[in-house]
Length: 611
Image 1 (tube, rainbow, N blue to C red):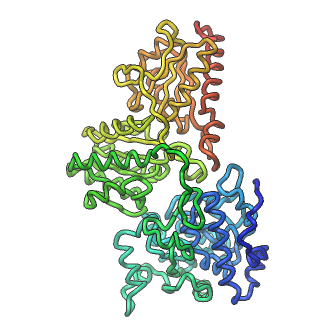
Image 2: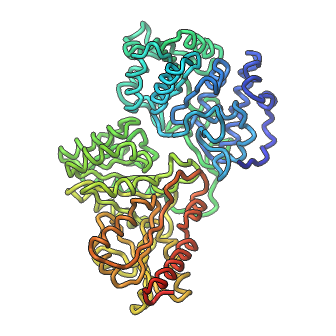
């Protein structure tokens, strides 16, 4: 893991002295508020410079200090649900000097990482899982007669809206002989204010005069709180009491997201939940010196709002990600037709199925990686009933610095097996608009539109269109060596590769089917007129679009050899999106190299016209 020199300012004398948890635990209580202030300044400096999760980490500074003073990590297990609030934990467990490489290739992960430290137990950054991990660890502690080793799960009120969290609470509360400490970090929000009945109950617990009925006590937990999460002494006392009770305990900690950083505290939208490179004085990105392209999300957001204006049956569903997935413009114009169900992807999908049964056309907007959590619902609750639900998957493919749990690389391999499901991958803004309208017009079954994180590239016009397939490039009609089937924004490197291999004497036809599932039958006839087919996708190549096309060719008796290019079946680390795609061979040079190698192999097997 690489590291770069740290900024010289601001000076942080106390934080510099923290060499490990022993130093922290020996620090006089009177010095802790000053340490918290230094940690906040360090986090602001580093995150504003490199990008990352800002608001969540600023809100848990005192809580994390208290956790590491009461419990002996890693002997005691501290499990951070979601993990985007673990920067302070990393600072206190010996990784302060690595923050110069935060979220860079080969550098410090933006989430807990088992490869980085024994203090990181869980690195999956999908929400609502920590309590289930805790349940399993507590069972293991009991079987091994190690119940003196504490199991502590830190979960936010936003993540507590997830179904898995309640499944775990149901088990944990009934297991009085397996002590687990649940630390509920209640800041009233995830990306947005926490929704649903849980938010109302927590508000009663926070502000009630006489104690209301307590849901957590009803589930079998001892309940401590609410405690001021920015009062280190109070939090330490509560955690110590919870530890000594030797039973399932929920400690209710009330915090302020973005605490101590005015730009975050005053940001009602998401308290600067996650930022790119920003000015530390303002929390805003530096002024742009030139115009930049709109993001995929913003194009979708505007088009969906316009569609909702034209079609009263269009509704939208999100799992606690209203702004990140682009539903905010529609929610502003049609607030009664946008539904935020909390961090509950399974429920979101089946709720959308109910809306579709009643004649509405739901658009379910979520990150591609999070649809994995609701695959059963997509298959059994939507596709089996052939319901017209459109899934819009943001952050598809390689997302970059957030790492393996956030890369949206699994959806294509999972969804290609679903009957009645149509999948589209737009290559530019105009095609996104068109495909979205086609999806919403489809009343015959579910549809999927997926696109990556970031800005939309320059338009890629078609030179011709044949039976719904866009021809993006072709050489002279008599030179049909390679059929290159591109998908989504990989059209840009596909065209670059075509120019390269043309200079080597190979003719290339580049086509974009737009809708990649089901396989357009015209691709069969196109393939039969070429000597080699190469498919591109920014999902896992095993079981993905290329595999689906190959199977369709085989079923139709098309003998043209097919090379499928995509992402490897492995967990891809965090890093720059362009660099990671290049490593996978999905840039212009990589695609060209593969075509030329494939052409040579095909020639050795007697295919004429290649090499």
